Image (cartoon, rainbow, N blue to C red; front, side, top):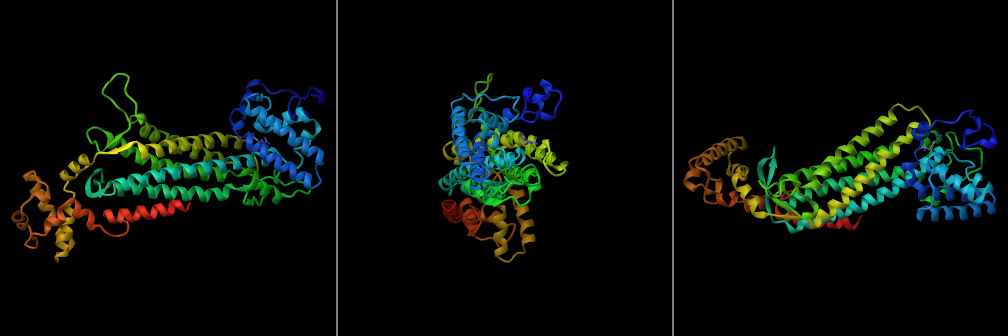
Length: 465
Ligand code: ARG
């Protein structure tokens, strides 16, 4: 192929064109075009640096700036023609720039490679994505705090093995999720620091022969640091993997909450009602109201976990430096980001405005499960009995009460004293739900007083982020 028939930016050394299938197989423009803003932003920072360093003339720079403004307008108005032949977002924009402004456009790629260009674009895109995730996580945390405050005194059965264990409050239960999402936020913030490093300057893999100034590019683009090794800068995607790992954990937390919501809104349990706008009906059974949002979130967690495994597997066999394998980083990463953003937005709304707690149903469940049995044991211990003996005594009391069809506080003092003379009239205060709740009065406990204090701390922390 001679110069006049050149179709691709790179086909000078090629003697036959690629087939349509290979063209489609190798192209990424249909999914990487979403990074166009970052691509233009990074190109402009690169061009300005080249001009400052005297590698590019001021006239070329102003042509590039003018050309990029035109391209931005074309893309925003939907007039830009994305071409599969031009492979990816980088070539599409660069070619259009050359078509609009001529030689200055062809000079933009001086001292740069698509390898450091794409790594820069992804990092800029992901940095913005993380900021959006953090904002939505904050909204979700605010929603959980609001709900926890509203239900700080509402008793519900706490479960182990999905069986009634001890009373907690609904507020306390919500604050457990708040802790999970707080750690998720910390993970995303921590990950952001490592995302926010500048690859540009690494060029194809070894750096470049031009007298570039990487620090000024980093400053213009808001990067906190430079990628310190050119080979690493163009090849590793650990920052994307880290994000996907943090996202998988966050979705896993959402999934656990979803599982509980599905259970709680089941009419046989009935602890909560979920507003209609988060549910759908059945095409055949008119009575149904299905918890589609939590079920889908639970399902989508599988996809997000799969994306993490896809990226880990993508990376594990790659020798240094850049390999085309890395083009496959984008779809799992974008899918993870999209899924997480939608899920967080919908859960923030649902938890704030879509959940009605049915206290009476939770109370009924509490009355059936001998939820204060541990409190009876603790009562005996406080009167001198070793805990293991107390455990055995209460086991016998529960067996007896079960036979009578009664809950513990419904037994008479005489009946209780049959099992231990240590039991006195004051036992009933310990056996009530309220007594059991307020007795767990230490940091991290379920006493309403503690829940209130935890809410206060959470509010202060949230304001500080
Ligand atoms: N579209 C490519 C990617 O996403 C850009 C970098 C291509 N570089 C190369 N030498 N083929 O990774």
